[in-house]
Image (cartoon, rainbow, N blue to C red; front, side, top):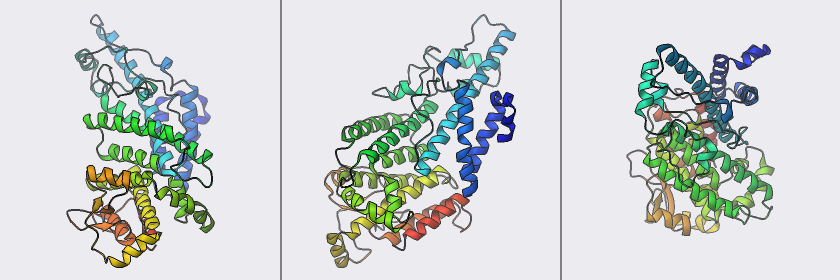
Amino acid sequence: MPICFLDNTRIRDLQTLQANMLQLEIAFWSGNSMRMELAESFQQPILTMLRRRGRLKRSMYKTVAPRDDDDEASLGAKYAAWIEQESWKRLVFRLFHFDTHASMSLLRPPCMSAAELTLPCPEPNAFWSAPSPTAWKMAFTALPGSPHAVPCLPDLLGQSELRFETHAVDVKEASIVVIHGFWRLVSHYQEWNTVFRKPTQNLDGDVGGARYQELTKMLESAKLRLEDSHVLQGNHGLLFELILLHLNISLDDVQHFAGLEGLSEAQRVYPTLQGWLKTPKSRQALWHAGQILRIAETMPQKSIRDLAAVAVYQATLTIWANGVLRRSTEDVRKSSVQIEPPVIPSDVIILNTTEDSRVRRFVALNRGVPALTFGNSSHQVPITDIKRMVECVLHLLRTNHGGTPGEEPPLLENLMQLMTSFASV
């Protein structure tokens, strides 16, 4: 595909760019490290082509709307123009979603800024799926509101509450765009926190404290609105919980702690993570990790793949780190001698269930013993029992893909091998 763009005329060809986008997605989630690296590298050219052509800006998109006095030829021309314009728009947002998923998976900054996406959000899918100019006109006239009031991502992120009712916009598609936009804010916060955090300062220090509170309030408010729209289900629910997870933990530090960068790096981040363990952030991260596993258990067969697989892996890594750090403290080590598995204290906090007052006390005051349950079993697995916890997560993933080893997609299989190595700790 990149060879196609040696002819400069192809950089303006919609179908060539769409084909390139599909190829990037297939290669990035292939599980083949070389192909994944190439896909990440070739994201930049397609972004540059769209950016330089002005496709990220509102000024490139004109209002195309049918009129009552349009004849057949005029209506057909408008229909074709609207389809092409909407196709460019949806290609940009497809790349925006891809950039988000790659950034979260690889723990690197996103390439696209939320502020630069001033193009209008996708218009209603009733327009998009109209099979003819006449059907398109009927769908258009049936929608209340003004076609001129299509918001862009910065408009929606800047609202104190997400409101789509007065806009000619597809609520679900716009909500998904907003969720991906939140990642830019959380990523920027994590970058700020990492750069200005002192070596002796834990993750709940004064650095970015006000920003953290603001982001938390914004995300919790948005979550309520998105739940009302039934958007936070399946992959989108996983994505939102993963964003909240990243807000409360530096997974880059956790990966270093896991030894993926060598022993010296693990020793370097250990004091920082010990300080983080004492803060409400560690328990909030633990809760969101549990929610990712809860959603994963409800997903359809063979749907835990790509970003969903990464989300389950990162959630497991969070629970693993929290369990190892808790187990390493003296009081937890003493209690583990007295309590033989599977018996655990009565004040158990199940992480992969719905929130209640006991969960809120656990997060705020550290009251309770965090644990997980899997399937229909009432059996409780404390997070300090690393081996059983990882085995249960691996069983969840295998079950989603039929229960037969080797049926998992290559990327998921690679992640499962990494999780298996954690179980020996």
